[in-house]
Length: 174
Image 1 (cartoon, rainbow, N blue to C red):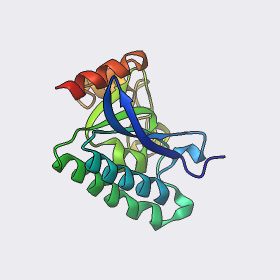
Image 2: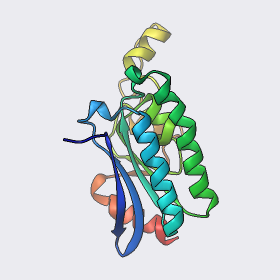
Image 3: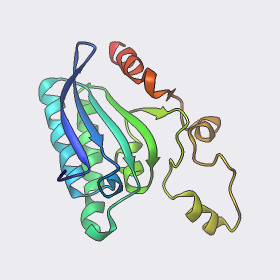
Image 4: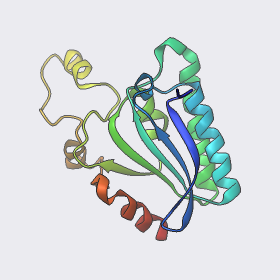
């Protein structure tokens, strides 16, 4: 079995070296935790050393509450790691998939060049049900879906999964 919800490594995409971070929602809902923070930190170091772009696939239901504050203190660490990659002049591309909520959204889902999965839903800080309870009325049917985010200017790169490889290559070629 897996030891963490995130796997990292080196790869090539259409002949270009990249460093990747991908999540597995099947492992505790890919919730944000200390190990994910450390994995992104190490991947950022590797990206800088190799002068390679960092590509992160974001999915997860939030921060791992049973870790308490430990998972939350990893969020600034991830923000710093991504900033270091960007300041090194390297691209950071984040692929936003369904769901990307809470700690995952603010930890790394809100950074870099963001590519949104076409047709995805459940993208934001709190889930739809929590928002409805807070505001006291139902929200629109397409609330927190990629189309809804795009209509408000929050998702400017919407990509079908089958086109993802080409779109990432196009961005890296700029």
